Length: 167
Image (tube, rainbow, N blue to C red; front, side, top):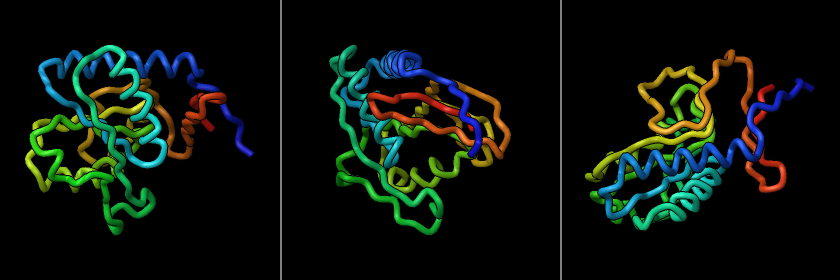
């Protein structure tokens, strides 16, 4: 079994979530509503934490939605949302995932949002690995790290064992 190296502790993850929430507020303070669209499953968990923190510092209305797709075969899978896509018209969307590596998952997750007129789409991640092969960049990121393609970043968001590991 590969050795796990601790990259971020629970406290450090919470600090980064808080900082990202403030950055989102700074860039979107004139908005009436912000939609946090978490990519199921870990991205959705990050989006829940981020929305909770955002609500504690802002009076802007928030909506949390789940984006579901097959991360192993995103081009062949259907991308679904747990809300009617029409309700997102003219809204600011923050697409959230745990790790940005190649950008492939985020690129394919954009599909339902491209069929309607949204005000803005931004992205938020706990970790950006920097191996982008798709034209995706992180608007809000907790931690940027250089890794080899063979290394694996694991984000654990269970409240008891919250941490980020590199193996």
